[in-house]
Image 1: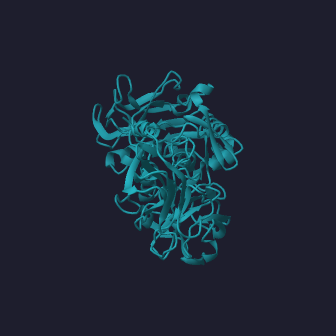
Image 2 (image 1 turned 90 degrees about the vertical axis):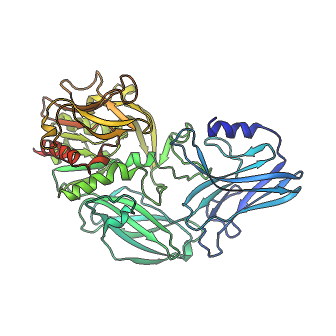
Image 3 (image 1 turned 135 degrees about the vertical axis):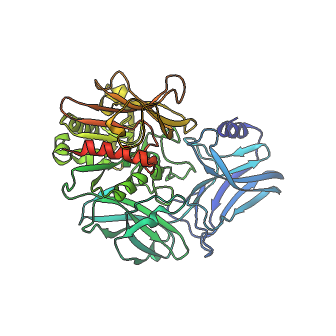
Length: 516
């Protein structure tokens, strides 16, 4: 039985006897706290260090309280219990206390109370009936996802730390060191600045603190740290004032937020359509859950950025918003010979799709290093991004642009190496020949469809990876207008760029597509 099914069965079983349920932190509430939500910062300063759950019982009964970390990307493992207590309590007003350990991951946690045979718990999209504790770290976010040199950046910060140190880092590593904090691989672009935050310990506040200098286009992180060891990051992209390179790299910032499970509503579950079918929009101004780092960013983007630095490639970095701001694909084509999507470019607006398609029709070259690209149409309404429909159901199948489109996915359950299919310029110098196998790929895969452009070639494939006929295909095509389009066909392809053969393959594609 799945965790959802078990929880629902328990919820409907028996009769409780618990009422007037509340949660507090024993200190001052933080903005947004309410009867079933409290903010805790377990740093040992005796200020918001504990969660106090109170309720009334009609009779003597055994009460169990579980602190649950929610997770929805792994079917059958919707929650993980990180702390529990069981008490035999008499009738009347009673309390249970959770004192989170220092270093508990900042996020919200659902508190499931089992009273006799009945369980009180929140489920995504349902009426709240259980307490939620928000462990507060240092949450920070920029209202925009990119800034040109000289533009003022305003930052929204939530923390009860009395003071903060702020410093900007440019991600400039030439290698990804697994197991280490990749953010320490950056180059400091500013000196640390100390800020007195005592006036804002009970509510979020905005701060105008960062002005992008005459910095190279690229990915940056603002690091915020407190004396108690808490740390948070806020990513942003520095875009060029005007095109500098003839190659643009587009970071998939829409997908970053779709996979952001930060819980702003306070029900204990991430605010994303990946969590609940009732959610159709995501807030683009939320902080990212993992200390401010986008989910799967390490898999989709970091290795590729390290490769760019290692090989001395000079590119202009853009975001989805920057493509959206262009008047048309003609403007993009006049600026760049090659546009690269290194990550999972799953969510694009109608205008963004129009821009990229027109760019291709103008002879612009495209490079997709992941899978499941341009799959969903989304709509931007202020700070909200709303999922509309699959592009293939709107008469614009993504294979017509990318060359291949989403065919299957299984959360990494089946992975295998690509098999080289025929001799090709793409594999020159890799040591790979027809029939050789390389890498280990899966999660989500693409394949050609009847809508793929005429002459779309398969460079490598993983036959029947996810069942009969569900084959991953790495594709390449050229258009009569001289556009060249490469698609890797596997979600985790860019993460293998540390393999010399894969690095050479990408170098070959880069060389062919970046030449005017």
